[in-house]
Image (cartoon, rainbow, N blue to C red):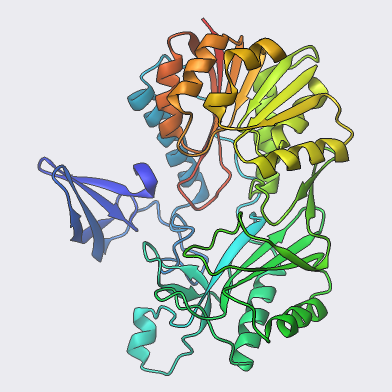
Length: 449
């Protein structure tokens, strides 16, 4: 197993990356992409199955673009994730490492996500079995993308990622749209009425539904009323009109039709307000484990000044604030900073402050002079990692400890190599937040040399 959950095979001096297989499978391959230094291929025939394989539990496995590791046992998945972290840190980072601690398991292996996005399509994807059956099949679907296809959606019957009533809501919306002959999304021409459906469930029992449509339609309010009546446990029912070329709506108005325009997640007695545009870790219980580990690595005693970089809605900042003297959060997205302040206010946290702006511009000498040199820096950047200018600022600041939380060990390793000028890695522990996928979080503690 190598990057992105693919397998690697060598034939003579040729490197071939293969999707949908397991180490130990014996297969015939069909090349689907050829590059100068490698090939990409898919299996066309299996001569022998690997002993590592297990029976996938989802009927959509192999057709849906998610949960691509269901054919591997969970312990095997964890082994490969641990290896992935080690390989990245050693081969890319090339820094001295302590023994990497055992990967932390996800508390749940199914129904662990608190957010899913479903897409409408007027021309759903058919499996080979459906085509061979020759039966007439309803092509207006509501589900997930097939692998590597923006325009092909499979009709999901049951998804194992999010707890009920997620499946019930999706099927109810789809069936209502069939019965009332509502126009489904054409992903190629971007026409139709119904575009996508977002469902957010919270560990408090709160439930948010967001219906995204291309334009206003006479059927919109009746559909929302139908949802509100059939699912009275929806605490936040919203819609957004979006005729843009993509489904992002951070720059658009979201209308709260019924209930509150937010839901709440809880963690150690703290309540976090989550709006339609808010970021929150999609595995709530896994996030709790991740944040506890982050706090443990930070080694807080109550006297520390903490900088929380890429703070988002201030979740980590507020989570560690009770163990710190003061926490300063910095975030690029201005609306997220407003959420961060709100989350501090909700929880009566008075020792936090937040700033919006480009990290490499905000985190300058004047900023550090104003707020003080931090005792601990917590950084949780996006998949692209930290900008080189941000790494340069960290090297200038010389905080005694840095806790680096990453969803991409490859870019984390790159940044660790740059930080090696002044810092040594003293602890590393991967965290599994996304069972049955190749994705892995990793937490690293650095200390000044």
